[in-house]
Structure formats: structure tokens, C-alpha cells
Image (cartoon, rainbow, N blue to C red; front, side):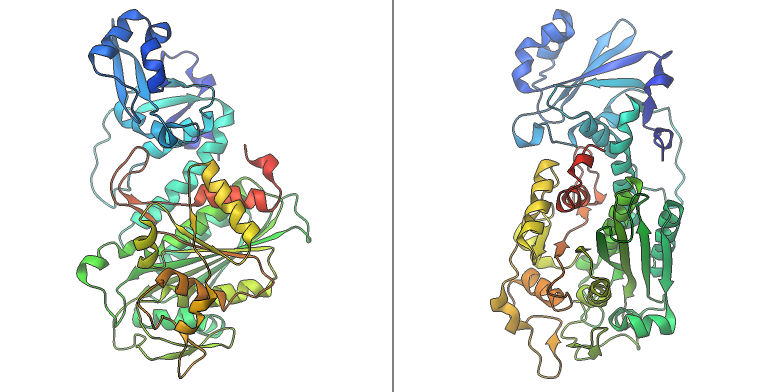
Length: 479
């Protein structure tokens, strides 16, 4: 991957013979002193236009031959600080075509400007619709050091693409093919398990997928960094890839089904994370498992009160067919633990309860290791990709009891749904394995700077930064 793969970016060397205009990124405290930055006439124009440098505010400044330069408001406080990677996301849609350079205060990271610009340039795939090409878009002039931020943006945008794809175009096999096409060129070994082999190795995934005419499958990928030996740390990732979720026989109401193409957001996130680890060539070993399945209604779909013998040998009563995500993940977690990973991380759009508690922008984090949780939370705070830790509260374990199996897949109480779901998953994680579970939303309900309405890869940057901290790779944070 090079900078040439990003149409919204322009290498500095390629811009030497082009007119390059400037965006001045400023905070409200700098507004009274704009004359020193852009000259008195332009400062007077900004004053008359009501420019206050609020977060995401853009003002085009006129010159003799049209737009001469622009102002970008960084805002005050947490949203407009040095770690905001989204504020520059307003620029691709607001700037005239041509080459642009952003000049920002020294405490605003150059990588954040690049990342935000790339994320703001994201456009949802056409899915067969005719689109006019239009005029050439604004392009950000960057140096070779921008490749790191561009890689993050590419991984985030791929996850967005996967989540945004209509479910008739993104079934289990389609998701598996994308994973193969993504990982094989990066040196990974990739297997796709289907049919009888799936039933034998991942009985819960197979059970969830029984109702669909599109067969379920599991993607298993293995990779080793170029400087990693057989004793290098092992990172294991698992993602829920429910390509569409009707709820099964416990069918969702129509309004709740409208966004269920995003129920494979956990798999999209873990695939993006694996891709980023490989692009950065981290000195570790990596295993990735994606449970790719569709939860449908049919004469051969799973039923409430079914009992499943899981890969681990534990039995599960299906109390609700709409609690299928934990069934998809449990066998993946069991197999992952067989390799004794140094860190096991899973992600899923698992519970509405997490959204009730924390809303759409704050994924819930659960972990059996305080240090792992602390590193992930600190990384999220550092890069403005936050999570909030919820407890694995043992007092609620009894709520998962079943009279006919080792456990039920739902709680007997209508409370703490995200907690009991995480407790269910913990039953399939060996006690000596450091494990973290991310319950995410995977969607932007409305458009904001750098965050268009639609699929989103919440926690990608936090998870990657947390991995660097957990494995003491912090010297690579800037890469």
C-alpha cells in the first residue's frame, strides 16, 4: 500500500509544480489574532462572515482569482483538541478542487489531519447505481510520513464498506471471500471451513446458520510478522459476522430489522484490525477467526428450546433465537484458547443493552484482566476512540442457568443484558487466557465531520493502540 492508493492525497513531490492553497486550522482563542496569520483584509472578511473557529466550521477566503485560502475551526475542549481525528473530515466536501495543505497548531497531530481528511473523503459504494464523475476533488498535499494514517483510514473505510453493503450482496460466503482477498496478499494463510467440517468444528455456528439457504462458514487466518519467531506473542482475534439477522423464530420487529446488515460489524472490525497489524508488520503471531452466518427463519431454522453441544462440550439451551451472536462467538473463542494466545480479543454488535447503557458512540468493553482493560481504555482516550468498561459481575452468573443444559443463551432477568452476554462468552475462555470483549454498535446514526451516516469501525484505533501497549510495542505508536 502506497500513498498512490488514496485519490484524496497528493504526494509533496507531485505537487511541486502545482498551485497549492492553504487551510489555516485555528482555535477560537486565535480568532482575535487572525490578521497576523492571514492578513488584515482576510481577517476583516472572516469577522464579517461570523467565523468563530467552532468545531468543523469552514470559511473560504476570497482572492483575486477566486478562493485564495480557507479557515478550519478546531473548536474548544475535548472535541477540538490535539487528538481529534475527525475535524478535518469536513474539508473534502467543502474545499474547491485542487491541491491543499493544512497548517495547524503544533499540538494538532499531522496524522490526525490526514486521517480525518481521508475519512471525510469516504463515499459509500454505488452498489450498481449510476454516478456522474463530476469534477476533480480537493486533494491534501502530504509527505511520505502520511502513509501510517492513510493505512488506518483504508482499514476503517473497508470496514465501512463491508457494513454498508446490502445483505443480498454480502452473505456469509461473500464476507469470507473479502477476508481471503484482503489477507492472502499480506502473507496470511487462510482457510474457509464449511459443510460437515463446520458442523464438526463449530457446531454453534452451524446451528445458527441452519435457517438460511446461504451456508454458514468460518474463516481462519494465520500470520506471522517478518521479524516474529515461533516464540513471538500470539494475538488471537474473533469476530461475529452475522450478515443479516432476522432474529430467527424470535423474529425482530420490522423497525429493528432495517439495520441488521450491520450485524457483521464485529467481523468487519476484526478483519480491519488484522489487516492493520499485517500492514504494520508487528513482531507477533496472529490468528483471526470470523463466524460468517445468516440468522434466518425457515422450516429448518433453530428453535427456542433447542439444546446445542458446543465445541467445548458444554451444552447450551437456546432461550431466544435472537441471541445468536454469542452462539456464533463461543466456538470461535473455545478454539482460539487451544492455541494459548497471549491476548484474545473479540468484537460483536452483540446487545441492545450496551446501547441503552452507553449509546451508539461508546462501545462496551469487558475483560478478565485489569491491565488489558486499562491499556485498551488508555489507548482509546489517547486517539479519541473511546470505550467504557462494564463489569463481568459474577453475581449474575446464575441468571444464565438452564434446567436442561449447562447454561441458557439468555438471562432469566430483563436487566444487565450486556453483562450477562459477556458472562456467557466467558464460559468459553480458559481462565489463564487474557481476554477482552468489545460490544459495539458499528454504525453512525447521523452524519458528522469525518463520520458519514452508515457503517463505522468504532474501536479500531483503540484496539490497535491497546495491542501496542499490551505487548510493549509502544515505540511503534507513531507508525
